[in-house]
Image (cartoon, rainbow, N blue to C red; front, side):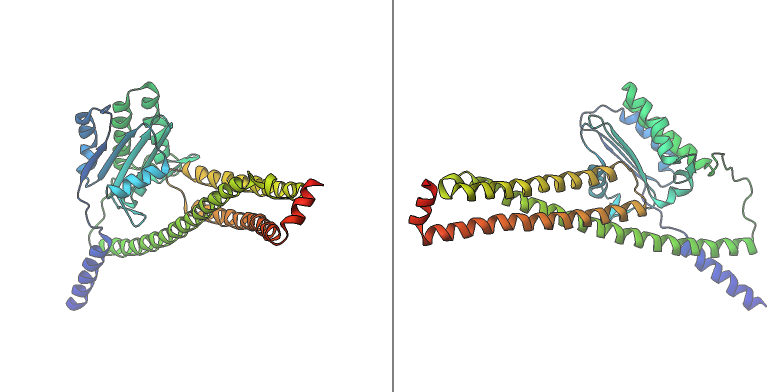
Length: 329
């Protein structure tokens, strides 16, 4: 009996070790190029979070957006391999771009990822605690109020119906401790699985976006080359051929403009979400794949225009006298 109890205790201890995340090194990063923030006030507001081993990032810039936010988080070590650090909390504001966002690690899901009404609590904090101060021009107050609201949510997390949950009953010893350890182990496994799934989705999204971007850039250079050659069409080919080239190139150019617009729209739509859901990331990846197919079709149209010029040039080399006669007719 004693051996069985010892084994249960050992198993519970092992599960507790697996379920307990490694504590992050608390730190505060403030990026404020124009020194518009009261750093001491921010340090005081962030202190309760830092005592919880949080890693806090504050960004106040003139220009920026979701892509810049992600770049800075990666550069400052809050995001690695597309995954956020467990206890990261970041608030980003780009004034001229009228963009604000809050990101956080999984360690704060119980406080910030909870649906409250038609939105989630982190976005409620952004719209009700952060943005009002930004609108009034009191930037320090905007950030300190948001930090205070995040701390309050951690202390008393909201429930999905908008009420406040207050934990007043500690876990009992013995069987409840073991049950909690087992449940914690399951939570960790599920969290890791979800993190891997999201990381793979983000990798595919990045590859899809970059692939289309490279294709569009290359086609843009080809169209510039075609425009340069078109300047000499009138002195190189017969009027009927010049008109045929003009129509074909204009049609390809119009379709290319549509591809560029769709590519930009897809990125802008995803940037509206401070923390896109997995389904939104996958939908955006599929949209990029569709744009790539359209871009490849336009590339074929442009190749046809380029081939037309090659054939006309070959004809001009073979029978210059005949081309001259046709142009005069």
